[in-house]
Image (cartoon, rainbow, N blue to C red; front, side):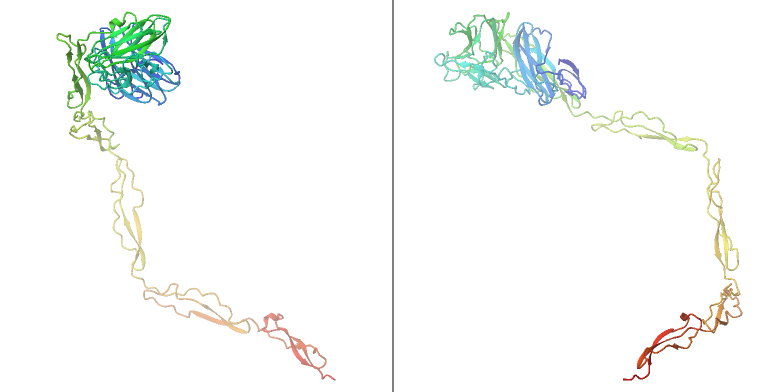
Length: 610
């Protein structure tokens, strides 16, 4: 991964830079982690050499982060001077963080470089860190303020370490000396000290963390000592220790630093008795020559004449090598002037649209004849008022539409819209019509013929009875012209008409078939009929003459009759018995005669002899 100059677009993150604060616009420096990123990957963005910054300098920048909640990037801002790194800011960033302002003041000498370092703490997780609007000013211009700065994730320390930011409650193994060797103890603290007009307003690391300090209010008296001893460390090679300290107050005693070799405290390697008039943190670097013995650092805080003498230390760092040309003798600058706090921002420079608001600050002189403060006394920021009223204006006319017809006379039109620009924020709409219409002419169109209305019915075709009447129409509504078609369909129609019935004499219909003979045997009759219906008499016509039916005799032969009974012998030779008898029909078919052809009848034989 690497820092790169990144042009903002609507599909990237962040979606706007801090300068313009406009969606999809701007430029930032950013670094991305991705599926190819390994844990521990580090990249550093280094500024050109910074000149004219002797004394104190203020470093301001804005940062933004976007990524998954499990993608952590360790983000550090520092100043490097002759290979010595002075930490300014450290944050373990993750998740989505909007543009956040950081302002840090620090002691500067030589020709420093500002560095931004990003280190991935996880492998293969997507994240993105961006910085923008980096500003560097001479002097202490932050007034101890950090805007919208989240709490830094506390650093933890396992065991003991001379290097310590005092965020851990174990204080990295630092201990107050026994009561027999000093008068009171150093205290671990966050925020401001309990006394007014003395001590820092927050720690050096993040402004929200912890530091160590001596509280000089009662029962402390002038000359009381508090000694804080570091864990043991080896001095087999040349080393140096850097630290930040605050000595704000009108009655500062002194801060002394010793390198205790074995049990020998020796002389202090650093002393500062200045009563500083602001709560800024001061930087110090002390060389530790090689002694090949086990050593300790001892920080000795000495009470001044009143409670306005609180002294604090933070961010102690032990490193190999020496401080270079900047040792303890250069850590006590004389500051004659400083900037006061910024005023509130004034009114926006415009009443509508985008403008600027301005705030100011005053250069406060500690002593008469002090030199003016370095940097600007004014600062501007973009402000957004309600949008300005925009009156609408017409766009250009569109091209003419096609004629509404393909032959003969028609119309065509063109349109325009009130969008150049469109009215907005209470602006007036365009005056006039959005549509323009004109006539257009083609050759005459073919006219197809159309039927006129039907004419009146003609007289009935007969004077009596049923006849026909006729109605006609013409193809003249309109008449076909210019090659148009004639009318389709009939030009004449007929309808039945009924006059007074005509006189009709009746006429006989044909005779019907003869009916069957009225008997099935012997002599009978049969008949046939006709009707006066061909035609029936009407309109006073005459009835048919003659009879409407006639009959004559018929015979189908003699009727069938039974023969006489023929009886057989009696079943008993004496006394009562039965005998059979039978007969036959004259037709030879017994079924033709009515009754039975066979039966049993009783009979009496001769008298039986007993």
